Length: 316
Image 1 (tube, rainbow, N blue to C red):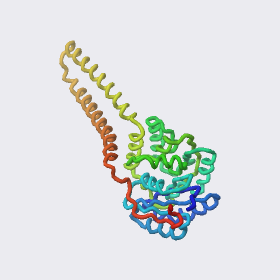
Image 2: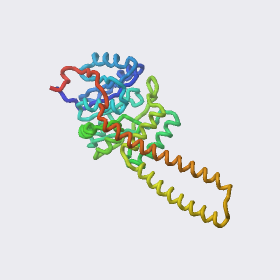
Image 3: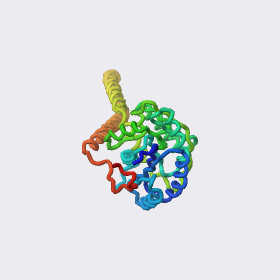
Image 4: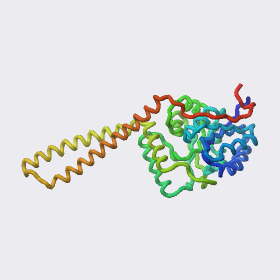
């Protein structure tokens, strides 16, 4: 069994309309690199014909293609984890199947890795996304960096390269919910970033809804930092001190001025504010407790239905 120099891990979910375009550009781009490689497609429980198309591609290029078929949708990052656990390259890259990251840019990341870096991220030169999504992504990048101290310029871009050491460290983690680029950054000793081009989707639409993006950022911030809890604790202390000061002020005012009916609405407003603050704190605690609950159940992160690979690629 020959170990390839480069592995490309590509999660696939309902991408039947764009897979043909991906194959047409991906394999020629990799063939010109002068590196031995393997492409590991992970079908993340697609409901369309994606699995059948991947089977056909495996039959076309079995010497460099491996296909992992998951039994159910596990999510993008768990699909990548499945690819990480079965890929063999010394340099491992991740690439989305929607062609927003041109496969022709893979060489830039490999060249940067050859300079001695163990993790290389990418920054989209000109994002082909809506104005709202671009602005929201930049805002979340800034907030995430402040909370987690993880400096990833473009966290939404999945064209990234990892050394075998970093991939092995990621595989040793058994977290149920995680954000792979941030996890890799925490393990990397010499990270770097390169600027790459960005294109519109070749076909289909984004699989990330607004709710999914919010959930992803919640997982990122609660999975890599206790700062949100610490911030809320300090806010609770400040509100408690403020409430005590206001209580003393109202008592003194009542003794000097007398009872005031007009202050009733102010007290109601203050009460609703404090109730809202308490509910936010309960929700924040629930996020952390929920992560603990998911972890202690020890359920499998994904279920593999089948692995398509050439007999020469199987470990002896």
